[in-house]
Image (cartoon, rainbow, N blue to C red; front, side, top):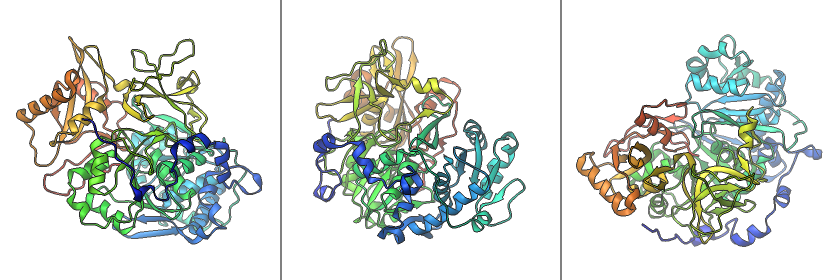
Length: 606
């Protein structure tokens, strides 16, 4: 099916940060954009926490609400920029008092509560390196990341310490300090963060910070299942600010809700750093996903810009449009999505249900910020990632049989013809580009060739400069001479009214090499059975021809990462009886109960 472009609306285009895409692309320079940063007083460098908090102290935003936290019970806690300044100073002072210094790693294992945001920014003020962990991790993935990252400090709750840390503490001799939130008595071997904060000074001077000083360490399993530490520096804040203004259309007067957990790069780049550095009000919700709860947050907090995941939006789609109609969403101006490719029907569903289309964008943990996006004042092509942001040079490179860019004597070839698939690549030089894989220099070097960063994603570029995701290179299915991208098959299946979601893999076949197999989650009101299975296979064959799925299995609980992606790697491993590898980032969704608005998974983007 070919989807008609969604034209920009006057509501979105009026006052948009980016109104003339071509001119902005021509005239933009990172050097000029750096003038928007304050920098440390006295020319002492660039620090993320200063740009996110302290830069606002001598402006009218000082007493504006910076952080509005909705608790699990619905209570709301607010912190102004002045409050954040004092609290992050105290946390930085706690670290300094403990002898934790520049470059030493501080890990957080917390939910979306005020203590998390204070610890993140206080760590960066102290020039220590922040490494966030998902609070849903089990003991083993926590231990592995603390070990790989050489964690010196862990900030967590008493409950999480008892359930997940106490049993592994002795296996982590490098972990010198465990700081427990609250003011209660701390178990042996731990410290009360509340008591330490109460005794810390309210003043803290940030030491000179080189823009290239390491600031963030994000662990990602990627497609291999092996955790890798992705290194980002303080200069990344420039890309966070610029891309949030362009791709999310964020403005200082906005109320912004990013549903991603800060344990993941989206939740850090756009759930902490970018919105605070722009001086707006950031909303967080500590509760689990529930359709009516989310609509209530949008209404009650008067959210203007909402950044979430395709998985979350597909969950809302399952409930139909009725729940959204029960809430006043008139303050909502812009909706964006990330974490995995956005199926065309989801973008269109937003227009019909929310009155706003959903704007897809593309980036990776390694890029640190949005690289390709759909903008407020430009048309949307449903299913497309959009176009490169100003300051970003993207191209599609000729690929070899393995799907990756073909490198010959260090050279690669850029595909000029529209619509031809190849590996998506970026010209290095943007400020949030990762600076390494921790302790893996060879792996980092292999991520570049011919003057390009190689993303590992297969894409195509159309005649208008829009990029279209096809597949991860290692997800491509090779069947009877065809190279098949799972995303295209999944999107077609989702056009059938019975299908809520699909995950597609290649299954070994002696004749074809691989055959296409789909795992399908059904919408409420549809029952699995041979009749529906044959109907879906026929539907796919009519739409896709030879690349249609040959087998379909019904599965109401597809495995997702907390970034919202269907874990094809895990589907393949389970189908073939292979080792599952690292499953620490897997969400375990609650199956849909037809006719009930039951909480599903906690779909953290992006």
